[in-house]
Length: 380
Image 1 (cartoon, rainbow, N blue to C red):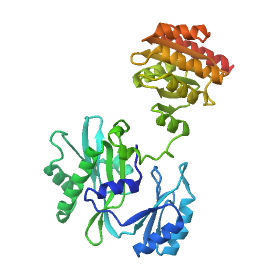
Image 2: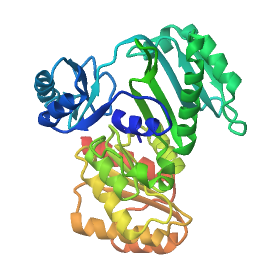
Image 3: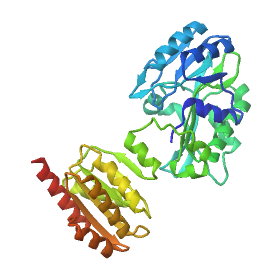
Image 4: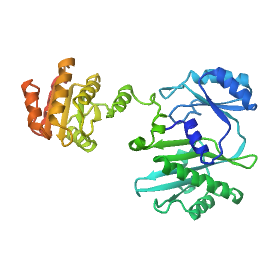
């Protein structure tokens, strides 16, 4: 889960990291009022969960409240990379001399958190990471020991930060490290961290990515989730506790377990098929959840067949069969459905399906081959 810039700044400011004065607004009249209260030039920033806002015209400088009102009207009517702008952050304009980068991320290659720093922050940081690796510095953090002061000094020295800022930089580095820990984050970054003309270190922009699997520990973060991000079916699936990702194939897949779902898609690919989705119903799914999952798949206009692959452990195959039966009776899809059941109450589940003449398969490979065969027939 990604947070908006204004949400990230609200969090990092609580950890003693200085940010510009500013407020969020949803219309141009509110923007004008905020600009009047700030009493100086302001920057108006579109709040959408995509990069490149500045290059798309979503970040503008206003020299007066009247100009702020005019620019806000333009920005709030924008759509950036498919996402409509519904909010803007209005902040005091900051004069600065240098742009830096500092962040903490999860290094999956090393299975360790890593603090990253660069003396060249700003909108081109991604290009710097790819083309000028010698300008990007990393220190890996032992989670049992935490971030050490010598690591912070080493990073400050590497990015050529003047010594007069080292104490403040230490507070910032410890701040984002603690944010990373306290919020089960995958990424916390300040980009750019600027050296202002009046000799302060200030977080001009920030980003946070939270581990979705840890949101149950952070209900206050779950409430911040922007449900406009993502496709409607994916949003609805998440509300019902299902993991659904739309793909480009024509065979709808309903599977219990992420590993089994990935294996199912691999086997589909091997036998010449393509999945239209990744859908993991998880363990212990009820008949009602199965019904909802099937409705999502059936609503996809690209689907020509449905492959259901259930290996019952906690999940009971007879419950799955009841959900399948209920859905097919109500919706009556025009395309075929192939079901493979194994594990807990598989015999009972197969009996329910066979009685209604719903096609079943004895193995995953047999089910995949049949689904591919049926879709090729549909294509003809």
